[in-house]
Amino acid sequence: MTIREIQITEIHRNPRQPREHFDEGDLKELAESIKRFGLMQPIEVRPMQPIEASVDGEVHGYEIVAGERRWRAHQIAELAKIKCIITDDDLTVLERFKRSVAENINRADMTPMEEAKAFRRILDEEDDAEVGAVAKEFGKSTQYVNLRLALLNLTEEVQRHVNSGAIGTQAAVQIAALTPGNQAAVMKKWAKGAFAGDNDLVHFAYALKQQQGQVVAMIMEEMTPEEREERQRDRTKTRSNIDRIEQVLGLLDELAKADPMKLALALEGEVGKRLDQMDRVADAVAKARFNMRQAKAHAEAREIARLNPDAEHESLAAQAKPKAPAELKAPAEPAAEAEAAAPKPKAPAKPQVPAQRKAAAKRAASAAV
Image 1 (cartoon, rainbow, N blue to C red):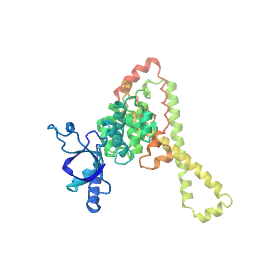
Image 2 (cartoon, rainbow, N blue to C red):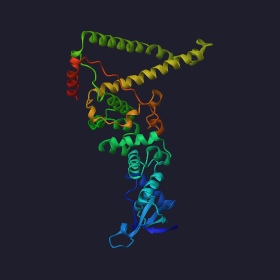
Image 3 (spheres, helix red, strand yellow):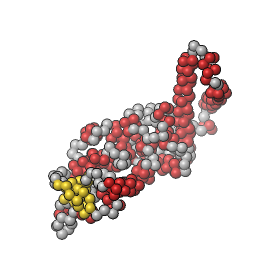
Image 4 (cartoon, rainbow, N blue to C red):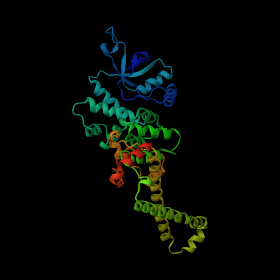
C-alpha cells in the first residue's frame, strides 16, 4: 500500500459503485472545507488494468475504490492533485462493489433507492445469496433489506422524488405496494399539494393499498332497504357522537383558563387522580384522531381506487402499517428499524355484495376511476 498525491485527471470513478446521487450543496461545502483545511482522509484507488484503461493497452490511471465524494469536491475546488492510498487488491468486481456499499450504507448520503439497488445487485450476482445473509453482512435486519427491496416496485417518477428526499422512506414503502396506475394517481394528488406532510401521504397510500383489488362500498341505489336503514343508523349515531364530543370543548376551555393555584385548592387531595383522568381522556382523543385521519385517507383513496387485482404488487411493503398516534406527531422520517418492525395489517373484510349485484358493483367502481 502506497500513499501519494495523484493528478485528478488520472483518477476515474467506478461506474459500478452503488452511489448515484451526490448533493451539490454538500459537495460545495466539502470543497470549501478542503480548500481551507486540506483533505483529512486520503481516497483509496487501485491501478486500472490495461483492458479497463484504454484500447492501446497502457495503464492511463486509477479507479476509485473509496472516496468518490472527496474526489468530486476536489474538482469543484479546482485542485490539481489529491492524496491517495494506492492499493493492489485482488478483489473481484462484486467484492469491490460490496466494499463500497459497506463504506456508504450507514451514511445519510446513500439514498434508500441506492441501497435497494445495491442489495438487489448482490442478490442477483452472488451465488446462493439470501436476504438474511446479505442483511447480516451489512449489519442490517432482514426486514430492513426486504423493505428496501420493496422500493424497487416504485415507478421511476416516485423513485426520483425518493432520491431527492421529497418523499420519505415510510411513505415510499406504502406507495411501493400500489399498482403503477395508483402510484401515478397518488403522485398527481401529491404534486397538487394535497398532503400536509409525509404522515398524510403514508395514510393515503396505505388506505389505497387496502382498497385496490377489492369491491369497495356499495352505492345506495344497489342496497336493500335493510342495508340502507343500517347505514343510515350508523351515520346518524357516528355524527351524533362526534357532535357530543365537541360539546365538551367548553368544559376543556374553562379548565385551560383556570388559575393553577385555584385549581390546586379546588382539587385538594385529588389533583394527581384528576390529572390521571385527563391523561386518559387525552390518550383516547389521540387514538380517535388517528382513526379519523385513516378514515379521511380511505374516503379520499376511494375516489381514485383502481380495482385491478391482476396488477397488484405482491410486495413486502404491504406489511408496513402507519404509525401509532403518538409517533405521528414527529414529521421526521422514522428509523428504518421502526418501519421494518411495523406489523402486518389485516385486510378489511370484503363487503357482502349479493350475487345478483356483484357484477354491477364492480362496473360502477371501475367507472369511478
